[in-house]
Amino acid sequence: YDSEASYRAVSRQIGIAPYRVFKIINALGINCKSTLDVAFELKPRWSGYLFIDEKSIFIKGVEWFLLLAVDLKTQDIVHWELVSREDETNVAWFLIIIKMVIKYPFKGVISDLLPEFFGTVRWLLPGIPHQFCTYHAYRATEFYFKYHYTGGNKLWAEKFLLITKIICRCKTLSTALRAIDYLESHQDELRQAKLIKRMNILRIRFPNLIKRFKDHNLRPDNNIVENVIKQLNQKFKKVAGFEFYETACNSIKLLVMRYRFHTFNCSRIPGNNGRCPLELAGIDTSNINWVRFSQKF
Image 1 (cartoon, rainbow, N blue to C red):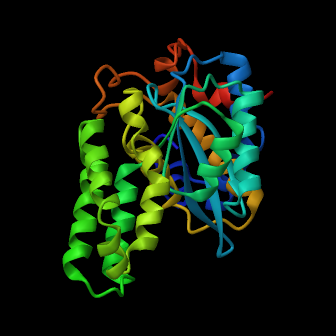
Image 2: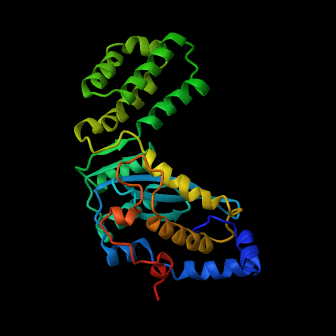
Image 3: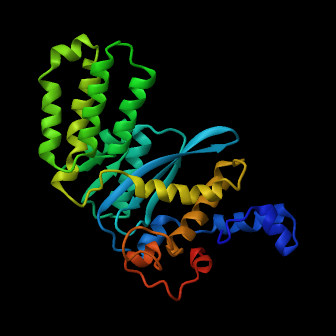
């Protein structure tokens, strides 16, 4: 895990068969502490602003989904779940564990446009601001016009996309409000251009695209959690898919544990380089060997 090498590469280095290496690592994964264990034992101090995202993982060729929660300030992985579907039940259980068991101090949530995230956060975390990723919102609109728009009005398609871009990338609330008001005042043109449904989608999303102006701790995008996923993905690429759910979970447990103790060396966030996520969460990790710590007994 430290060298991000494959089982075959490690087996050549230490002179034992790849399957034997796998058995050793899998045994460590079986006995690895969960995110709940770490929260109870170390009591990290998080910022309260949580990114939530998902990543596809294949088990015997079947798509599963890794739900991931990352703290904004520390970039620590607060919790994860491997689920068969991104439905509201699984998302709700995921957030209930974070809220009720881990007792994460929620102040705000940042996510992509997954409807299950939107609905669940709204009823489970009332009063907590939920910012949609503006990058995903713009790209979704861009994708629609490129591949699905059949209205035939190129001028209004370009206008709508430009105004969506302004809403997603502007620096002030007043600019965003003026942009949405412009569209609201041109309903007839939007109807003729067959853009009313798209306008309704933007109208529904708009309150969650501007939460960042009311709480400046909220990021307009979820780049931080996507960067965490990219780091995890470097290890997943060494594995040609998983054969079983259990072995996938065992690998993820170790991978997440290693990430939480691994020091940043190319972070763009001031003060993060040279420190690991748990250290940024107020934990003295100087005398902790992450492999030994990871084991329950």
